[in-house]
Length: 194
Image (cartoon, rainbow, N blue to C red; front, side, top):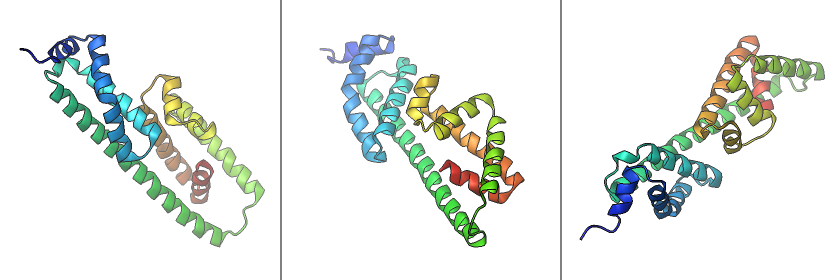
């Protein structure tokens, strides 16, 4: 007698949406729980879970067993979680570094003149306007409008990873532009963005 799940796998390999839905319902809750436990961020766990199933669907013809599907889901999810945790760790390290630089600046310049702040913000906005189009749009949505990665991704029909990459690209470009302008300006820019 054939394995009762054999028809689901056969349909899944052939691109059946019903078979995909069955696989999705079989694995979603546990996979989401696994991811949530690793990264302890509900929204990001939902995004990683969704992205993992998208990757699975793109490769649907390659899976011959439930075990293959399950292994793929968990390995892909684990790798995405590790990437996210490394990203979050870099953000934390950058914030600590900027906090230290700010402390040094505050010791050297105890009070900042309103004119200087205005000039700094003007220069920051000029540099933001020089960003590549998609990068600028995502940067403004994230930092100026306060939107989360998931909301930006949904609104622009992008993956969250693309949004994260574009945000990182914007900061890198602005870091170079503002660092060349003036170190104090760069530090104030970072503080303004935090």
